[in-house]
Amino acid sequence: MPISLHVLAPAFNLPSIDAESLAAIAYLRFGLPYGAWVLVADAANHGTKVSPFLILGEDSVEGLDAIVDYLKRISNGQWDLDGRLSKRDKTESFAMSSHLIQQFRPLVDLSLYCTAENYHEATRPAFSAGVGFPESWIIPPSRYSIAQERVQRLGLNTSDLTLPSALETQASESGPSQVFDEPSPSQNNLGEPPKPLNPKIAAQVAARKRLASLLANALDPLMHLLISSSESYLLGEHPCLADCHLLALSSLALVPKLPASFLADAIRKKYADRLDVFVRDGIKNAYGRAVTPEDALVKAPIASDDDDGDTFEAYENMDIGSGEVELPWRRPKPRSMGEVVGGFVKRAYGAGEAILAGT
Image (cartoon, rainbow, N blue to C red; front, side):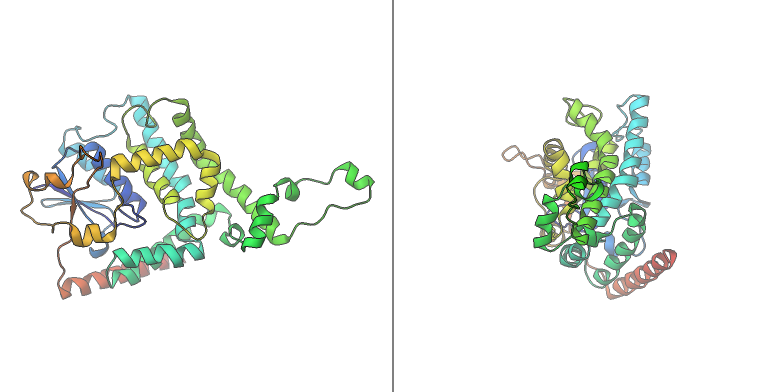
């Protein structure tokens, strides 16, 4: 019986809309042999379980950290991506993973959930396409509330990061000095006060300066490792846990086509070459071809308790012709009406608790 990894459904041509699910997919893809696992996009159907979660026989493990520890244990360390690292590099991988979750994830939340245009025109429709009723009514608002909590400390107002096109042009032409610098002595001697900047533009220039500072704090240390090394990954020629987190979050920051693309624009402005290469190669090696909800929910063979390594190996294959990874998707099992209603009650109760906890 293979391990089954359960994630939130694909979105934006990525195998999941959830950063932790994407990191888990990369971890299993890089760390486990072919035929050892299957992938099911039905995490939304399982009540209050934490996404992603893993099932093997009677064992059920929730959350990436617990999944990593479980895989280490059942494989005697063979499925530990950080197992080949030195003690110092293991500590470094853990520290970078924690840093990305604390510093980079809130910026991705800001882009996908806490910017009105992006949430209503891209993120919520993506949930609706990949998550069935009634979860499509419950999960997006719950995720939105959690994201709001994470971004509060950033000190950014998303309305200052998005402007009408006419003001956007002026803001892009207005350097930070026009907002923060004092007028030069020559200006004062001539008796000509500096021309005031439109307050909305001034607010956006200040917000973008703040965004650039937050982004530098989140990514500069890791980009230094990638740029200064000839290797493909953060700590050498093989991926580690931190690479999985960086790939997941960077993919959600750069791949979705959003109405307000301030985060992707800021990332590409500073890290264009190196991070783009990391994400492009990482997607190719970890996720393979572009994935739609239909691929995971309709076209994939149905999940079965009788699956074994010999029957599904072809569904995860580094194809010699195209060089593309084919993830081992399994279609979720149909749910009974009782399971649908039970899932609704659990989700509604859990979402209510999450919202109350944030008030």
